[in-house]
Length: 185
Image (cartoon, rainbow, N blue to C red; front, side, top):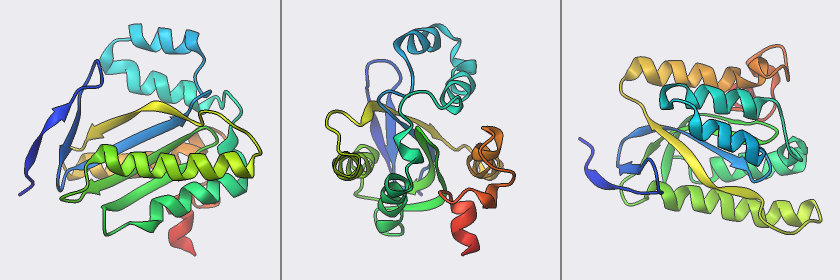
């Protein structure tokens, strides 16, 4: 049984840490949502906010630096590096301006620490690869705890189908920066 740790507040909806908890995580590039879109999302009913944010992200706004294969590979490699040690990956997808991860937390590795390590490492390296400076990732990230196996399965399928939904490829296995194509190797 997973042990419960108190949620951390981020000013509106708290993140929660729970060893063994499977979560859908989304983090995005700093320029992926214009301020006006963020304002609209903040007034969107909470039950519709995730879907509205996904639609906005899938429009591929901003520099979409993750569409550079060198940068997408950095993110992929960072996600895979501690799989099975600090977290357990179920599914992942690097989109042009955001990343989806479905993972189980591991005791002793708080969610904020894991995401910080992914973002810090990849931001520093991506800025070098792209010959740029400044903030790469948006400060916040989205997390949603999975309530049951059916939700895990649906979210897994959703994550791997995201490139198809966004019109980037014909089938999930065609997208080179996801667990769907990685398993096929």
